[in-house]
Length: 86
Image (cartoon, rainbow, N blue to C red; front, side):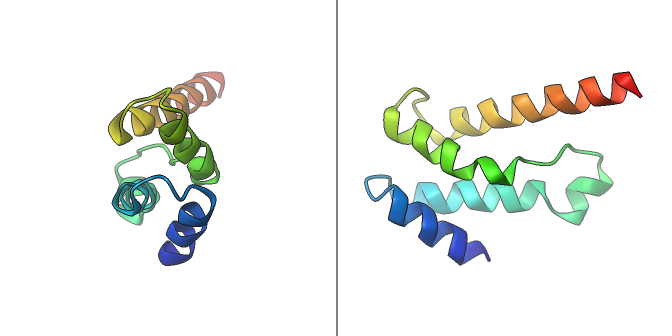
């Protein structure tokens, strides 16, 4: 699954360094792991990997860590809001 996701991102975004795409997918998988769940970390929106890669292409966000911050912050906000509503 990991390599399939990396390959799909490389195919759709050939001008992004393959190592950055691999790091992006690796981070998503780490945040979706059982260990992260045990720590009550919110899920990384894995369905947003293409959007994160697109941000790297358009340089709206300059680097990989900024792209991850953008998506993780949105996920954390949703997580906090959903917990406060229950």
